[in-house]
Image (cartoon, rainbow, N blue to C red; front, side, top):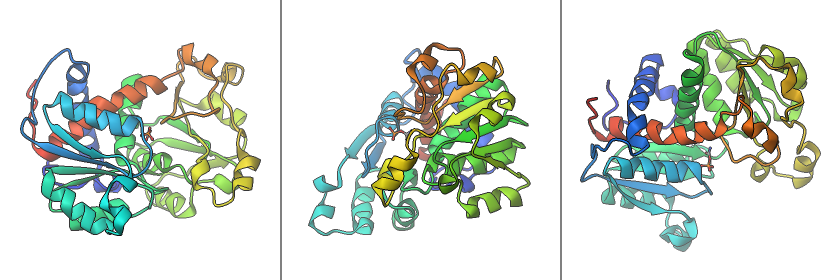
Length: 311
Ligand code: CP
């Protein structure tokens, strides 16, 4: 499968066959991700981890994935700690990091930053979230989590709820799910619905998502309830955020109408969207989902940086 030395900027860089290859390899990576088996498939390589926006899961799971594979990591967590604070532009910063490592992982507050980085970097660039744009490695771990729970992605009934406008994880995920004939329901306040250009792309790929503001109507048919945080940091007006915060909250009472095997996912961090009482129900899958970031990112790093896992 042709991943070696390639960028991963958008989920649109991948087709179904490539996605399934990564999901299959991720499954093989689980015992390595847990430390039950050891293989230094990327010994001698260096990963550059640039996180110019806060992150717990993506940054640390990429680091964990790299270390599990014997790959060294150089990293920056704040723009203020780089020469960007002296006026250096992103392109020159990327050229410099490119000279010091074998692949770059970039999180950036601006949509399009990962594409720019990929254009100037000789080594591959992996988008770890660009503003309200997309988050393709999150999508791969989301798909892995769904497939592990449900056995197959084909024909699932998936409900996306919350901030579908600014939530980049749902942008990538919705597009990927169209490759698997998934039925999609989009639950959001009118002002936070999925951007029309993405809905148009879903329709062009044969998926006609249902849109609603009423979460209760969507839950009984759902196989997967994918909950997102209202992205406070992306609202131009804090008063608009206050009007919408708390619109949807998943608790045990709302889950009474769910199928017994329906899973609740969330890319995390959560604020108040999922009550902690849900954590101990069989529906909760979000902490497993966060762990899955390690084997999935091991599969991505191995494929892009040229590591081999044979068993
Ligand atoms: N899911 C996710 O991207 O989490 P972080 O912002 O903590 O990386």
